[in-house]
Length: 397
Ligand SMILES: *Cc1c(COP(=O)(O)O)cnc(C)c1O
Image (cartoon, rainbow, N blue to C red):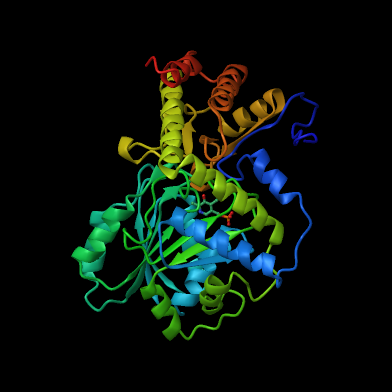
């Protein structure tokens, strides 16, 4: 392994700690898998690879249905979902749980969709009751899709997708359910088929431990049928060729071959560890991180204890203390990248990514960096956060 990324302006020895909620750390096994020549994407070897990857992704999405893979960031899969199932003037119901929901709303606006927004204080998940009430009031069924973000990475709050499904069913509303699971897939339990989700979107660079550059989507029969009748022009993002891809393993354009190697290795790692173990590990790290924050006397952005995300924790700095300055100090002094506050909570929170490939010592190292950073930045706090996390992780708390 050559030098990792010495991001600070001045040299700091040792390995960079990439503790952002995406991109996440790449396991050596994934790096090794990519370090191979490209292969003919029309040859027999690629077809086998394509089918293998689709089969393993089905296990992670927990679906027996169609899996789309696009060479794009996660946003591309959002756009694909919109142009395939919706058309200008269609209404969608979206809960603005944070910056990523807000970006989805903006993207929908640019496609000429009418967005009915349910507002939140960015400190909890979407409210299924409110969604149900909005659907019940929509007697003419103008709402074509209900959109929620499963793990709102900007606030570290989860939305209970199963309850959203139940609310849609109670209202007997035909809208499609579309879920952004970009930062929850392979971090939290997710069940595309069982929860009755129509479109699930994910990306490679978060829980899946693959470099940025691939977007995924799981598509229900109902969403495929909606796409078949939808007249919106689309070319590159068209879902129709995916159905063939799922049978053959080939794509209608050059797929990102080396990222497929990475993905195949990462999926093997996840399935070997066992998804339930992967989720339990994320829960444990998230709990340790919250214990550290509480011991520091800092406030979590997520105010609903049942909604805290397993892969990322957003922590508020005390009033008048810049979270961005704290992150800069931590980067310069300790060679660690943390996530920044986005949108309306810019500079008010910093986010510790603890998703993907991470060991206990990397987590306690991360928390040490934060605790030393708090001290160096002169941010009022109590020491002992790392101790609280260690007590928990060692099984003594
Ligand atoms: C990272 C993220 C996105 C953006 O994905 P890109 O790959 O940057 O396009 C969208 N939604 C959520 C919840 C995310 O965490």
